[in-house]
Image (cartoon, rainbow, N blue to C red):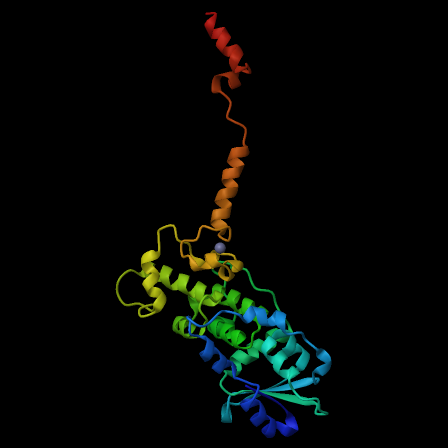
Length: 296
Ligand SMILES: [Zn+2]
């Protein structure tokens, strides 16, 4: 990714490429080794303070290359609110009188970047899983890819929204995105945790033989699945951000079925004990009933 002032684009591209800026894809390659990588994206949002006065009013985002390149014009502040990665790099731009900044994303898909920009302009909260309901495109097909872009751009809230969309629509996702997730989502990331659970659970349900999950790393987890293992879509979203999200057989409070069962148990415990049948019917206390019987 390159971010430059429009009129000095070429010169600064060289400067940033060779000094400050490492592309998100390269950053990911560098840190995706599970033995070295610590999942730190969330910390960046807290570390970098947004200084809006340093920003130009509008940024130009160039996505793709050649004939397939697409250009978006977006308010810098909108992008900076949504992406810590863009915010940090726009802050590194030298002070100048140029009105525009250029962000080049040659390796990204314009459809996915447009999803990010649309969300950045009108941020939405994560959706809550509703069985049998599905979103509209482009979310059905591209939610996992949107999460991966959000991870590269360090866009925490966008990632959360994309994860909720993926959970809602994963059963319909054409050309299963599971391989894409295993290759791009960092270890211990919420998306990989959900994907692992889904693949293992479905592999177990599919039984032996070749299916769409064959060959995936997570398919090897199918042996861990128990009859009590849940459909992963029903868990609260927070589950995938916590360690319990690693456990395919998690018994945690993020499981609504477990919560409902526990609530019912508590309700039954609070219920008054059932009366003795004969005494209740006759309106006589049990003690009095016993003494009546003993006098006969
Ligand atoms: Zn949990």
